[in-house]
Image (cartoon, rainbow, N blue to C red; front, top):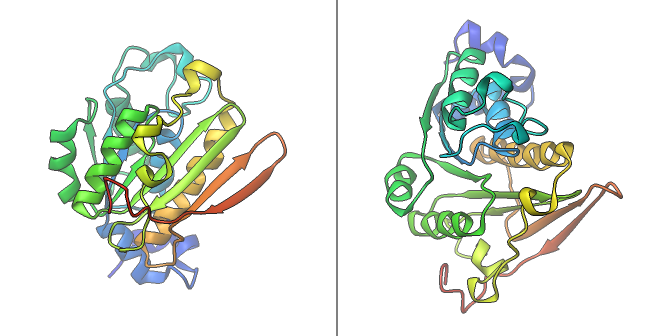
Length: 247
């Protein structure tokens, strides 16, 4: 059962028939790993903490820099030179002391992925480099953990759900095979408008809440956002028979 405090705190989402008490309990029992506490990871972690996701693991080995402050909305100048995961954990714990948050203050490698993935129900990829993205995708497939991928540069963003529990689910490697060298563009090379990150992070958070509460989430659908023209496009994907990761 939900406590009186939980009924009050999460009342606006509990009243939705697609969530209700049971959905809120599912969120309370959920464990989520968020990889990358930058422009995407900040709002994703904020939304999931606010929604009452019971356990969050926040992974990032980087430190806050002044160049982050334009878009990484959890941080301020007093946080500069401090580890991003540590700072985010402290601030989110203050916002919602009823949930458990653990900082992983280093970059995820294969060993860390294999340690944490068995502990969680869902992984959210908010990283900003392709090697990390391939690693997360591969280990999620191996451990059969749902994965929500997000990326944004300039005025554009993309979002994809991978669910290895479904035998028909394409993975990130199906979309961008490593042999074809997926684009390495990131905020450092071509820039970013902050609100685009908020839009993609909002989509990632929404997909996470739907998935954790048992609502339908579309796999094999790449969602592309064009911020200059305020347009979304959806592209259907297929699991690749020759994918060396998921086939």
